Length: 382
Image 1 (cartoon, rainbow, N blue to C red):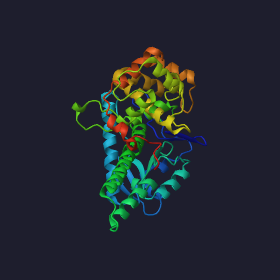
Image 2: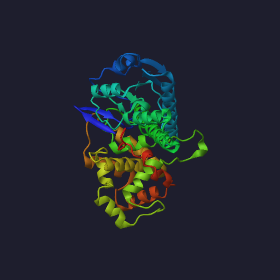
Image 3: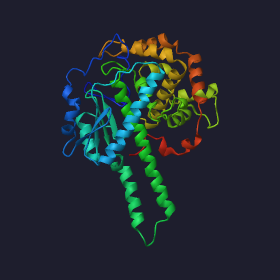
Image 4: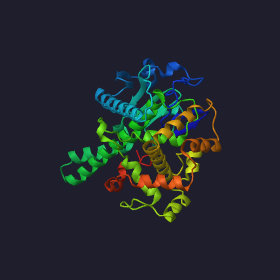
């Protein structure tokens, strides 16, 4: 997600493909942002009392919580880093490792996380984690202290201590499953998603001071919400959560591999699916309508997945075009669609049908579709 406040940009997305090219170098932090703010040595002071540094190969995590929690988050961050590097290798994109560990703040208390979020201008209560491009810091709350998770844990604790009358075991199991699902969706759609943004900004994939298309940033980050196992033979891993949302947006039944023209038009007229010219031209992914936001994230994921898997060479060309944009200057809709067409051809019905047809033929597990808690971010009540 990208949020704008007082001229600053707060990114929940991926942003770094330009220094990939030998003729271009990173512009560094935007003017007015102290480089010291992103220095790992200053992280504890930014977090507050009790914060200590826990280092991994590529991250410096400042946390006031238990070592085991920071270690678990660190393992997931490193797994995401490896997945992003592998993704770049598959596209034959050079990777430029960051010169210092990437800074991360991990708050044990949700109230402290919200306080910090307000200080940097981030106020999206539905997302308990974000990446701030200006300071280059990713910040997260301990998922177990989120209000919804705390409430479920309270019910479980009360039920397990209650003897007369005892709570039915199946009810406790149901609550435990709900809590596990919320923790999993947090790990995938918050930690991995935001870490992907930070990594992509710092290994030479997108530039922090460029006008990166929102669909591209979010679509790239969504690729890493489901991490592949680290063997080359695993192949393409499909993000079932985003695929389920995309199929909902198009309006097809679980078994359908095609969509008729009328159904596609209906999804466009109802606003569930954005016209590609609008998506590419700069339409916002995050909207006041939570359901449409979910569909737009899914659409961004689907477009990036399609282009990477079927038009890889053209995708690299497109990234070069984005990297060549003037720094700190927004592009208008016409410029954005012209850039896209230069790399991939015109955004016409033929392109749209090929894209939708590709996505609907991806392997789909309807079981995930029925378990809404696994796919409702950012509409999930944390």
